[in-house]
Image (tube, rainbow, N blue to C red; front, side, top):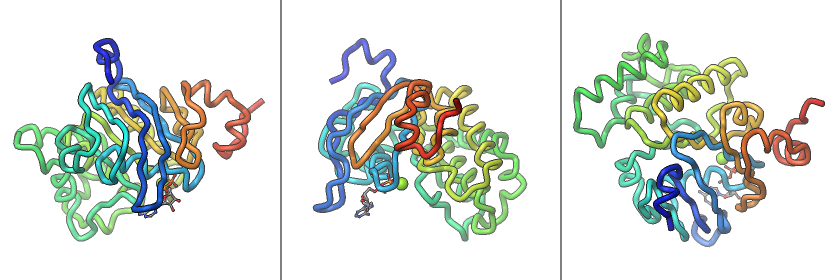
Length: 248
Ligand SMILES: Nc1ncnc2c1ncn2[C@@H]1O[C@H](COP(=O)(O)OP(=O)(O)O)[C@@H](O)[C@H]1O
Ligand SMILES: [Mg+2]
């Protein structure tokens, strides 16, 4: 239950969340909160359930437990309903439509919106964040590089004018330079638009450089939570889960 007090700062409260696929249980009672306007990183090894958690947060998998978004219980809502509540999901593998143009892909992200002028303004805003997408707006999305497709996927999510952005491994398959650029833009979006962001990332170092809070997920349970600085400083964790060593 949310209290009037946490209504001030908590944007998402996840409590005792269970989810899976048919008989295969993946999340076993996950609980955490995300502050309004903050960036939250979800870290953890392959198969831990990070993707499933993001799917649960946007209504793509059935859940048991509680999901309170901005004070309202939303567990059990459909993906469409979650999108209309302002939850934009950038899935693993991006999910852009190759035969459609860049501009058509971006407009798809605004599908629930009726404010035409606002949509056009947001299209310009996305092109300002990602000028390469403006240059390629009439090209089929399928011809973009991996980094450009990730920009398109994030841009499409922004077209919802989301209150919360869910990013699933945005760095997957991208060069360090492109990844760095993408995370810089995610940080700018968070700072300028006050969009709450949850980012799942295998590149823990990078995720922790942008995130305020972080949670480590292991076999469907959160095993560690803290500020990004606390998680980074925990050498045992960085060795066991995060795949890099802290500098001494
Ligand atoms: N569509 C699916 N159907 C059945 N099992 C799945 C499906 N997707 C993922 N799983 C299983 O759920 C577990 C967690 O997967 P996932 O959420 O993708 O983890 P992560 O993103 O942390 O690598 C894994 O054991 C995986 O095999
Ligand atoms: Mg995953």
